[in-house]
Image 1: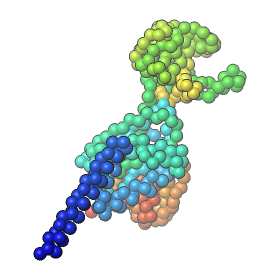
Image 2 (image 1 turned 120 degrees about the vertical axis):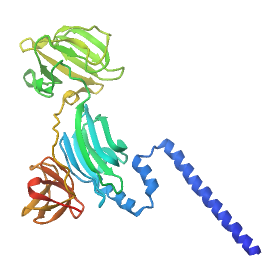
Image 3 (image 1 turned 180 degrees about the vertical axis):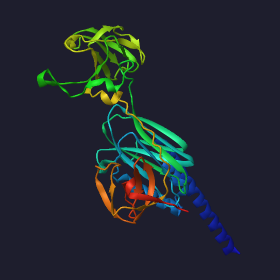
Image 4 (image 1 turned 90 degrees about the horizontal axis):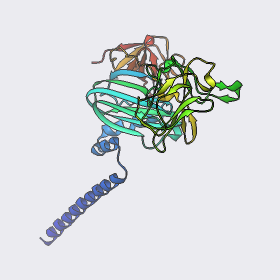
Length: 381
């Protein structure tokens, strides 16, 4: 009887120690989360870390971090998340400072994870994403681009997802266009063009419009200078906050604002003209942006890329090659890098479709784009 009580006491002590240990681990994790906020993917992992399928799901994310599929924006893709494998949609894009990256993902009743990384090359990929979101149904992110470099966008649905999706990736300008009623189609002289016989380079863009067309504040701020001086003739300098950028409007016909005045985005600052060293040219606005590190190209800040709605149905999950040889490209473009060549009657998994190209997975797990003329969709039961 004594031994029985000893064994019972020992088991109770072990159980209590286990409870305390687990409780301590949980408390340590909660404290750690205060200082380093876990990503939605990491929180998802905690609930499924003992699930064998989750381990496969997680493992499929790692190759997507180092693949090399490039897209040009705007980009749209439709498809169906597959419950038969663990798809990760990964796209590399080159973005410029001043743009705003927009990613819209729609998929009914399915939640998915959206991560964005910045990198100069694969070896320099940040350990933590710049943006990490979990969404269900539909999500949109808007990320102002602070540095011109490559970015990697990854989208992965939850385990066992089997729903149709649509992905839209594009950019928007971060500033209002500085000439009322016009767009970047009116720009006829660009950053870096030679000036003064090649002795200097153009530090801005020239926007051509009729004389007296209103010139607008591209953002909220205050007027740092309004007057006439030097090569710029009648000019306005708009300051964005105490330590923000300065926006330079030159060759104005007349000025509507005064120095130190506070203005709001869209306010009229003056009117298009050709004063200063532009007196022999047709009326236009010279627009420049200056930071603490010098002038930067204004074009990405004001440029709008045209978006075209794709009108294709979500494809089947499988396809068969109908050509003798089919090149697998790293971009949905016939002039892009050939990653692989597959043979007639080979089958591939289809991740999605974008206009004339299929986004596919090969049997070895590598991904790429195949032209629609080289593949036929197969019905999957």
